[in-house]
Image (cartoon, rainbow, N blue to C red; front, side, top):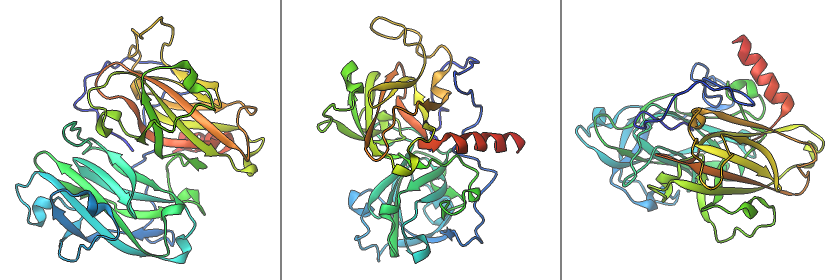
Length: 359
């Protein structure tokens, strides 16, 4: 998910990254979309349930929205009878999923939302773009594409709930396409870089800095939960600048034993050092300092897409693995703020960029 930076002032200096310098976001190619006529696509455009106001209970699929209004999606809510309204509102859509989608990872294209949103699938948070008051951050220029893990998908009724905040002018889910699709059977349905092991979702998070936090066996039970990708200011850490650590445990299926893998870490604000099972696999930025980085943004690091090649001996197939990410943010937004997030085979990664070169 991409977060707009139009309100932030950061240096823009040309830089050659040790892996790649990308002028485009590999997770969002707006020129190609899954064909709505495909058997792998569910078109969600049309009428959704809608209510102004804000209540966390509205995220639940069990909530009774029978008395809510219905408005067209995509469309700004001003054109649907809510002219002049600024503030919080919720959208809900209950729809059926056939057995063809059961057991498959899905993606939700939510289009463009003005200004910020939190999106839930069957009551579970699957995406954040922008920030809500008191740490408001617009993301109205960002196309929303959210990963839905197969564990959340049910045959029969499923419910999407979208919490929106608009500060001025147009508001709501203003532009599509709005649809769900599967790339599991045919990745050519998406022009995006799709991880083989998607790690979008809730990670462990702690402010401060301790070199021991890179180790696999650290007890992080008491750490806070944070959604990745998403700036930390919008998730309860408003105004915080400095060091912080992220941790994520995952299992590597046996079929990837001996396979060359790459960690996709999206974009990080500002600099990072990334470890797997305690071993450094990549870093971006100048980490040559005594206590606090002085040149954390000299090369526009917050815009660099992270792709770290993982030595084969580091990953353990059939076992728990732990990613630890040390981040330093010097100003404005901070954290792992943009995707894709996950592991992909080196073969698929290089094939993606070869194909992209010919587009």
